[in-house]
Length: 256
Image (tube, rainbow, N blue to C red; front, top):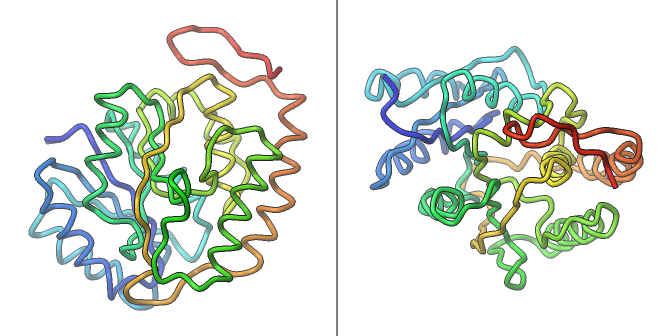
């Protein structure tokens, strides 16, 4: 039986070194969160660690296993649909490598539940550049990507590429998830842009970010290449698409 209004979705691939610690850190918070792990066939046995922990947390820890790497975006779309079926009110995206701090989950939840945001975004850049232990090349690529996406799309966000977020259920119910096209880095931008086009309130929460503690980063040049050209395509398509408005309005919102 569901005992919380919130679920944290974490896609994983080869996160055996981090997964138990991140799960225990989230379950140690004063506010309860359920966790959904979506593992893309990690050869290091990540899913095996999760299965052992499910015996300890049978009603709070869930696992979906997929065959092979199918992309970050597809993993989240799968998780969103799972969470909507189970009627969670607040649905989170979070990395499993401790670059996102579990201690910040209640802050994102409060931004939506208490302050009225529809999407709360853990932002690295709304109060300067707040990242720790990243190489300069990674900082420049990430920050530059956010600025580029802001200029092209017109989103009033400092961190358009952030992947630590809380959605109200109605946002994911409204967004046509099967029309989300991008699977990699550009997925994060497409989700924010689509939510904005649907008329939802997006708010940034300043957070600190650190480089992963253990394991190997999944970032590479192909991911950023997809984002560079994908953002242009995303903006171009928006001129010809009607975006659904919030569910309680029952009308379509034309792009302007």
